[in-house]
Length: 334
Image (tube, rainbow, N blue to C red; front, side, top):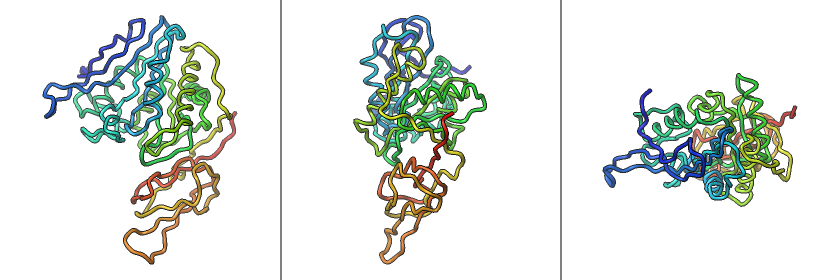
């Protein structure tokens, strides 16, 4: 197996609390022998399951970053049995830059798996997770939100899997997370996702989308804080009872690609329904107005299916090819 260039300043097998770094050599004009220093925390208390908690997969999504930085300060070693690995900022260069992708190589970490030990900076980070961190864990939680360009109803997400026992465990973990919604998600470019990398190794995996617009709110941070604790309790690593959300989670699914509505025009965007609204197939969702001239009729966009508008484009200007809306359908919780 080809060795990674990344080294860790923490010992994953050592009992106790360690705060350190994943060190990725990066030689550039301002630092000939420099390293990218990705913060990492490990809590280990005897034998038990391992939970891998991550945020900052995209650098402009702040609930995971914030809540995991808080967790690294507040988690008590004596309250756990097993191991918790916390990486609040997976794509550290993107987080520091406040961007979805890395400013070094334009890499989108969540489209870079399985990565490469000799590839770009982003590919090397993906490879380290693929070959070193994912194999250590039994459970993984990756916290996302919409970043600067999307906004979501808050949900925990899982996928349909070939292994139905694994799928059921993932779905239970998502429900225990306790977001207002739990979504069986259908992804674009699923083959290159961190999600797929974790699931393909047989682990219990849950992701989230907790808002968007390139910021966080007290409400979305509260969902993340509570959800992280609940996921740790679900895994049996953290002792205690699940924290009950204010409302029961609603179970949603994206059955096929008709759930995605992409824009075929560029211009200024007027939504005619709100995020979270119920819509019927053919309902008017949005209008796009030309920025090039006056006197033009707007282009109208209609709902492609019945369901809930689970996501929407966030900026007021939209480009051709941007996802305008995402729909999900409510299903029975068996």
